[in-house]
Image (cartoon, rainbow, N blue to C red; front, side, top):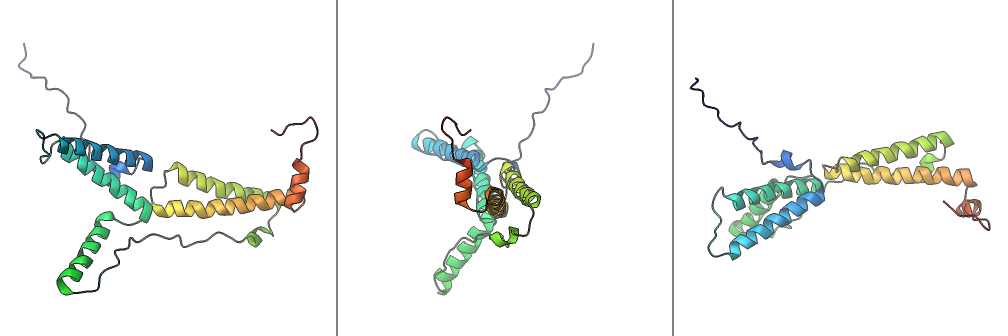
Length: 196
């Protein structure tokens, strides 16, 4: 006979922070925020319920806060808390010290690179053009598959997508005779044929 008490195993702890929500796509984060707002409105509309510190609704609001923080950082590249604090301080200076009315603009991240001009691909061989188009397309695929966790990555994906399209267009035109008209004549259907 044993006096050992068998306690149930401890449940895993969910840490609610930005890092937890960075793995989700934008649509999932937006849906989570929508559900939290909807549930909170339902609680507010029920007179016998109220929101208390650390109850389910309060925890859901914290989850929505972090989900929105992640979305804001993805779209702007900045920390939402810091931008809100800067806006609050600027408005305080305006109201209390008579400073000029602040613009309250949201800063956006811009990519320091721009797409290459079509002439940049002129000197490439057909194989080099095909490789360039493939490499640029693969970079875009990787950015999109990773859900573009930062706005900078999404902007970079746009630039490389443009470069991939330019290189691929240059290759296709070169292989088909150098013009869109020549390309059209090569892919024109013969009677009884279908394009597939």
